Amino acid sequence: MVLFAHGSGSSRHSPRNRFVAQTLHEGRLSTLLIDLLTPEEEKIDLQTRRLRFDIELLAERLVYASDWLAENSDTRRLRIGYFGASTGGAAALVAAAERPGVVGAVVSRGGRPDLAGSAVTRVTAPTLLIVGEKDFPVIAMNRHSLERILAEKQLAIVPGATHLFEEPGALDRVAQLARDWFEGHLASGQNTKARAPR
Image 1 (cartoon, rainbow, N blue to C red):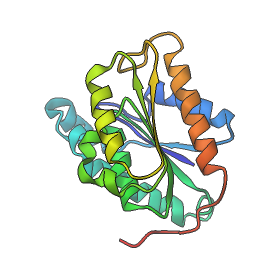
Image 2: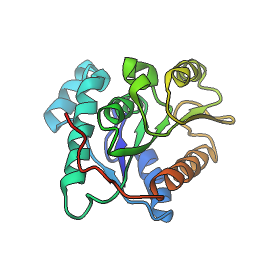
Image 3: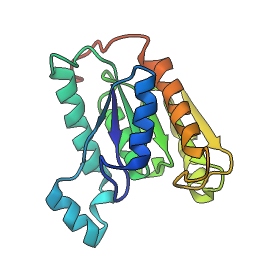
């Protein structure tokens, strides 16, 4: 089960994330796309752009969703992965650090792992950071964060791609990289802990 953490100003309706989710489905992976902000919070964020950078809040919502999946009778034996985009990449890393026994893999697309702070050093889930070749500031941020992640990790740079991976074939490459990573790290077993201690 891959839980999506949407990025700056995005939602569960993001066409990019829905495209990635469809590719994951083809790999027999379940997905859950949720809004991390309430409708009222989204209205505030559209004006202030503040909540999309509240990584602790976004991560907390991911943890709640993960706990719900871990306690639900239909999903509790599924291993959980996070797919984070932009600021959602930071939230995914913070949440993964909070639930080491529950989260089995993390993929970040054009993410801001630098915003996860010291939490990156506590991530135990195998982590794949995907960045566009032409997204120069974000490449530097991801390289720096990669050095701090102690778990299995990899940085994948998509040739010719910018931040939103709008170039022909770029998002296809992201989706395939994510699918391969999740298949390799989630399909090998079941969730063995219903919930890590708070």
